[in-house]
Length: 190
Image (tube, rainbow, N blue to C red; front, side):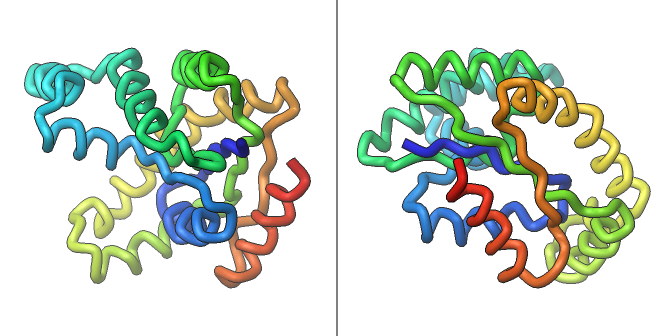
């Protein structure tokens, strides 16, 4: 089983590349945003817990998110692996994910970060904002703040997996095909 974490700041192309990786390697995509929408939309016990925390303006505890991850992973016993998008964002989440996978007799094969210059990200998101309908994609100060938060939160996670020899950074600029080739080259070496 090949389990991957795909990292990159907003606008780095994670979504585009994840779709292609899923197709090539037969992986199941796990996005925390999708998990929350599913669990809360279906009023599952974990979804109701998440709603309660959010209604109070509090962060959803890691154990609730990990529970959602466990449910998603267990729904796909046929999977040849998973690609985690947007998770983990903190060291405790990385440790919890590692425990979850260890309980299932598997582990993270690698974390791959798409390295994209901040100015390129701002340009990409502003361009995306012309058609995305997301107000936060049209405000440069919000975009820059999202990039700062990403750097602050994810750098420790990258370092955590680097200590385990599992972190890789690839250039996230160039054509979609060029970036995909770099990703595949890295994955094939894992």
